[in-house]
Image (cartoon, rainbow, N blue to C red; front, side):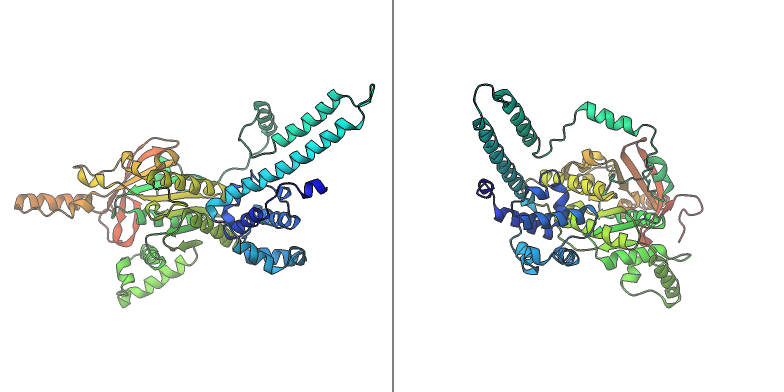
Length: 471
């Protein structure tokens, strides 16, 4: 015991790790394969980490306040030194980018302590009875301690490697058992539902387009449709304020009338339309949708926001089904490397991972390369995403948006004949949005054209009756 007490440990590292997890609880999932409660040298730290683990696995919010409440409810606050000690841990916290490193330090020191104990036991066993004919021979001692060292060797960070025999037994045990069905989220837009088949937990659906192409209209239409399915939606609006997003929701929710969202934002809604707007607001209030418009966020802060939204929705008995992340280019990397491609790659992968962990699909809106504007045919393709990291590789589905009307409306031919043709072309593409699916996990790539009224953020199936309709 004395030898163990003098063995390697680093209380500062343990405090920094615990403080970091209290401030950045979303990072817990990144260290679950590295460190356990028993790895902490200080019993107080082990107890604190145990509670963090229990709360995290139960999808409960972990911070200084909730952790304090947990210790109070267990009558264990004084055992750890009271509320002051939790505050001290917060002050000693490492930053989120260092949490994995501190977890490795704590785990490594634990294994070193175990190694010292094992070496001591081996020395004692070898020196106990070495007379001829002793019951415990050298081979037996070696065999016993080889097993101890092997156990210690495989107790390190997980490698992801598994024997096929283990995997086969696990798979065979599942044969004949009823498996829970993974819920498929419908887009609520028939063309997309038919081509893409819907979304499931952990899916990454990338929607790309140049400004003005309808990314907001599509994302909010899908958000409303998902909410109508009884699932919660988190909108991470890094570009628009929550008020601006709400104006668009209200505009698209008005029935049998047209109230452009710009009129709502400018407080210019005619009196005769205000009743319909109120009805739209009451309808919208029923949807389990959270809008979070904090700007300048890092990927760690976004992950934290997703986890908090999951908790808030579950308190209302609602499951988080979809996270709309608008958009990638407004997200700051966890740590700046100077390599934009690598930063974007890490960001996309981490957000996709957290989507799988919380059981939600991710809809990522992304701006496309400006190269689109330099082509005669400005319809985007998958290559226009390549400047934004590993999106193309990580995405399960990619849909690119194109509105011919947007570009034609910026042209102004001077010749009378050309003007007439231009007017006809504008009329022919009015309210038409092309959904270009360049990557489909299960299905065929292709283009679908839908009705889209940008002024009221409304998207629906393109039919003869609603082509050119006012509402």
